[in-house]
Image (cartoon, rainbow, N blue to C red; front, side, top):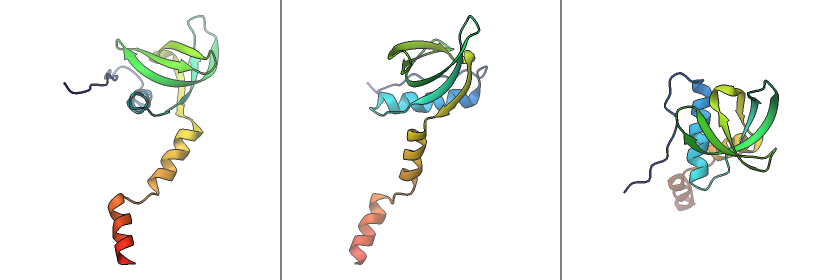
Length: 113
């Protein structure tokens, strides 16, 4: 049986948020540490800034994440997320990783010496 990671597919949600959430969930399920900074509007209208580590999807609009503010797992509605971005750590790691050479390129450069 192939491993299947459930992700969002809804076209009604903010597609930028959906893309970031899906990427973070895939990384985290595979043992990564992909955190997102979100601005979240609660049902009572209060707005808070949170750093979350998305873990899974439930239904078409709900995601579960470890919330650093509460230091425990919480559920969030995607449509209540006003702003979402990768944390500086995650974005910095990607930038450094993009500058790395492929294993084949490293092997070629060693053989040339």
